[in-house]
Every structure is written in C-alpha cells, then in structure tokens.
Amino acid sequence: MFMPMDFLRDMVKQMSYFKMNDLQIHLNDNVIQFDSSKWQEAQAGFRLESESHPGVTSEQHYTKQEYAELIALAKLYGVTIITEIDAPAHSLAFTQYKPDLRHPSLKEDHLDLGNPDVTTFLEELWGEYASMIEDVHIGTDEYNNGSAAEMKTFINHFNGYLKGLGKNPVRMWGSQDTIGGAAGVDRDLLVNIWFGGFYDPAQAVRDGYDIINTQDSLLYIVPLAGYYKDYLNTQWLYNNWTPNTFSSVKFDIDHPQVKGGMFAVWNDAFAAGTHYTVDDIQDRVKPAMQTLSQKMWSGKKPVSYTEFQDFMSVIETEGVFED
Image (cartoon, rainbow, N blue to C red; front, side, top):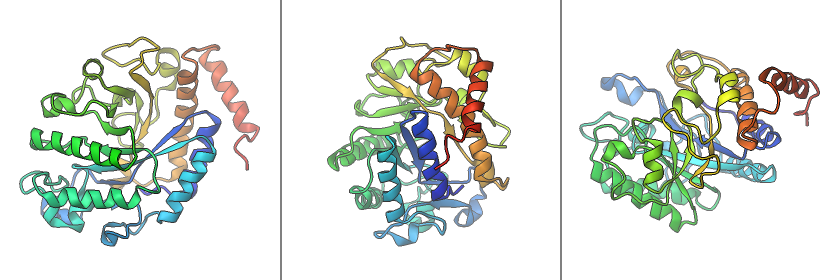
C-alpha cells in the first residue's frame, strides 16, 4: 500500500511528540499469494524514483527530492528515517522489471543469488541513494529454500558494501536459523527479531548481535487481514511488556544488546484487495505508538491503563498535533 508523503510527514511529527525516533520505510514489496503463471501481472511496488533504473519505479512513488525532504524534516524532529530495500525475497518489483534476476526454481519474487547481475543491480540502487539516505535495512526475510551459503554471502556483501558507503550499522530481519545459524554471517549487523522460528532472540544475543524487539505475535499490525493483530493489545502491552520482553525470554531491562522495540504495520489485506485508507492505519498506529512510547521510555506503568488512556484522550482533544 502506497503511503502518501503528507501521511509520512505527519507521522514524523506524531512520532517526535511521543519521542519515537526511528521510522522504517519499506520501499518494496508484493502481494503474498499470486498465480505463478501470471507472476508478471501480480501486484508489486518499488516506491522511490530511480535514475539508474527508471523502469523499476512504480507509478505511485516518491521523487528523490520528496524523500530527501522527508529525511531532512525528520532530522529536525529528532526522527531517523530507516530506508529498507527488501531483498532477496519480496522482490517481485525487481524480477518483473528484470526477469533475468529471478531465481529459476524458487518463487518468482526471489532473486537468483547465484547471478552476479543481482548484486550489480542492488549496488546500483543503493549507490544511487547513498548520499541522501541515513540508516539502511537490507531485508533478508523469508527467502525460502534458497542456498544458505549464497544467502550468507549476500548478507555479508551488502553489509560491507553499505558500510563502505558510510551506513553503519546495517540492519536486517532476523533469519539466521533459516540458513543454518549465524556461522559465517557478520556479527555487526543490527537485527530485527520478529519470528522466533527464524531466529530466536536468546540465540541472537548469544551469537553477539545487537537486536531490536519486533516480535510478530505482539507487535505486528495487519489491518483487516484476520491474522496477527488488527489493533495491538495495548492494555496487555501496557501492563506486561517492555522492549526486553519476548515470548520465549526476558532479558535484563538494561541489557546492552537489546537496543529497543518497534511495532510494524503490514498492508497484506490491502494488497490482496481489501481497501482502506491511511486514516484507518492512523487509527491503529495511534494507540500503539502511545503505549510503546510509554513502555520504552519508562519501562513502568506509573498510572493504571485506564488513567493512561484518559490522559492520551486529553492530549488529543487539546490539539497537540495542530500545526
């Protein structure tokens, strides 16, 4: 789902008020289920203007100037824009643009990591944006049944390539357990822990990674999809959660490798044809942001959840977000 620039700019201001400091923008993705015989027609998107590969950019997109201005605005408000180009899965926008990048035997949205043109293509995209972006995320999730060795090479290559462009740390979705563990994978990546079956948080810490708590069962919003959360269970989070709390383990509150928490919004249902608006997204984001901000800044519940909600209602009615 395309997020209008005005919506992102307003989101930056809202985040700043609640002292939420990272906004990760997922620039490419595609519908989950599609007919393999019609994969070139399936819904996919890459949302940033490209001069090196103009044909990859979707009709609904941000110009580079718009995106640079968003990054500058965010900086003024104390918010960092995390730019994610998700690969080598979720890459149907890329394989539709250049079919020779497609893996010959895996799902059509999987890039062929044995093809050096894949590395060249992604380097050209990242290189084009390097001077305008700040923190970066290379994706790496849900590359199913591919070569573990090739995947490890991919992660290490783009970690090194982007560090060479001045981007440090490089972020990734935790997926080490799907490629035989962390052996052979760089340890200076910042890892979003989202699904324990792909990478267990305790194992990630033992492996030496800094991590961000993005646990899917607690922190994923997928509007109107019927799975994960439509709205986060903010009462449970308020009373029980802190960023060091995972379903399988609870780290010390000041554990140096647990860098924070993050909730996510995935628009799977919209991509599949259930249409809704950014107002519907905001309605779900607002209570999530308020609650997680309280828990990530204080780690405590100084008042009851009901009192906290009442206080948030007062903030809203007083027009805090008016320009």
